[in-house]
Amino acid sequence: MRATSCRATARQAIAAAGIAGALALALAACGGGNALRSAPPVTSRPPSASMPSQPSSATPMPSMSGMPAGNGLASRHNGYTLSSDTTTLPAGKAAIYRFTITGPDGRPVTDFALSQTKRLHLYAIRSDLTGFQHVHPTMAGGGTWTTHLATLQPGSWRLFTQFTPADGPGKGQDFVLSRTVTVPGRAVTSPLPAPSSTTMVDGYTLTLRGDLKASTTNPLTVTVRKSGTPVTDLQPYLGTYAHLTAFHQGDTAFRPPPPTDQGHRRPRRANPELHDRPAASGNWRLYLQVQTAGTLHTAAVTLHVN
Figure 1: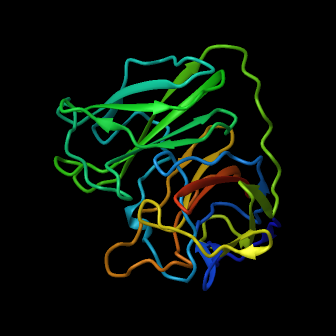
Figure 2: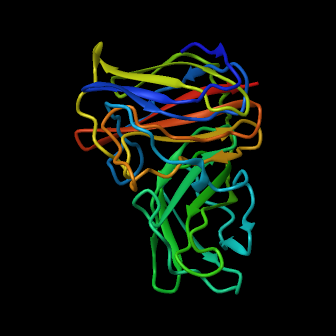
């Protein structure tokens, strides 16, 4: 994948090829000329874990007004707090993580609005931006959430929660809160792959093209092919045909995927647009999730923002 210098007024989009054309995702970048780098293939998972699908026609999607403020690195914002007694998780095996979201009154929040078809999303990432997981915890009656995480490698991890209260002072506001946990053991970090225009996952080739500019929304097109042929069996995942999550190198600042547009306009199978504005320069690790034939696939690429 090649990164070219961008125009200040351009819009970012990501497109993935599908039946009738290319699937477009719009990611507004905060950086100058960018390129996406290929990442090592990420293993596929069942729909319950993470990874979306690709569309095949162009359609404007969500507005940026629904995006959470900040970079998600705080455990408390506007009176809402992510609380957990867990500070360490085991290495080399699946783990269980429990937490609560408390409101300004100090009580656990139990009423959440749907966001991308779920009441709460949890994202896990290691400090070197590897080991990405996107899961959907379950909540008990008292407001305690429980999630199952796949095998974690030693190191420092940050767990992000994304949610929207359905009641109370924060009703309708999107929040991203996070906490860190330590996985004991000898941590072997992986260098961030350099920008590249192409990456592969599960036999699919994703090619990205576009110009990116700091603090602007520029078009970025991603074409998805298998054996050289455009993919035609994309399926919706979490209300959209493609899901994108981004993390900033160095501080692991998080930009969640924009909410899907399920209101005035129905997303098309191809070229759905997402709008986001990474607020810092540097390298960002993007995780693109697509679903085909009931199987979710996650591809990773590196984006540089000047």
